[in-house]
Length: 433
Image (cartoon, rainbow, N blue to C red):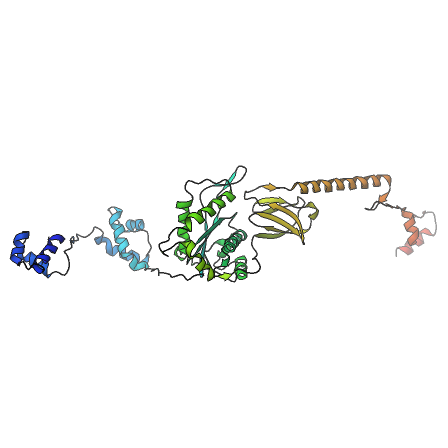
């Protein structure tokens, strides 16, 4: 077969230099018909191997019959049903070629993002264990927010994947941007839209910010593929070679890396750096609301005798004078506060550990004083009962009267009558008809 170099030389000699076909054939050592074919061809010669078929061709009708009924049947199951006697390679190639005819093809359009329109959100779970308390280390979620137009990245580690903590992280990142994207895209994270509908706390958050939360269709990671790819970028570019002493240390290192590396790199898709396009993105967003949205973990509970409330598997002490009353518990990623009415009755730094007991020494001292006062009161009551004197709580004595005094006051007489009295029987009968 004529190679490309000879084909090009034949055409040059004949068309540029006017060399006859016979002379070209002599110079190149080829047949004159080969020269004529090269001059007639519209393109360079291509080598095409003659297909010898595949061992899978004989099984194609059986495979197609199965795919008509079960388009997604796995290859090993198909091999078993058709009695496939060879290695899996030829069957895999056959399935790759014909299966799309039965399952259909779902093309993906190229999306153009406008400034300020969309921010994709997701939770990233780095495999690195983070020390959170004495002898405790946990894998904690990282909330990641990616602006679709500028590709600007924001991220922060949060204590848990509960709704209040996720909303706290979102507000922290949005407040740092200084503006609100018009749409926040989420997958069906259980605390945001696990039922297919945006949860009430998330809807309230979006309403306060005048934005909307859009949930991705089920099993469609490409819907927010930008933030999914950024999670992989964190795994390969941020995590390797790093150690972290605490969640705060993780966030400090992450913030520094976002500023110096992630947002200053050139992104091919936008032909620029995220940090350079951020201001264009921001100017098209919504202004921050005048009032901050409600975020964090909150609940209402009647304070029990042990004067502790539970937040994310940890117990925090409360002023024991509130025992028996309803208290409001509010927890941010950094603090836990408890209120009774308008009075703050407890304030603690939030622990990201699990199954810990966090106690304010002042609450223990107050509880000890209350137990001591109660013991004194009970001893005083016991002494008064033994002495025959009753006392009010304020300490003054209460007189104790004899029971006959009350009989005389109400004009009754419960003194038993003698049986010898002849009038006793009629009186008794009269009184008991």
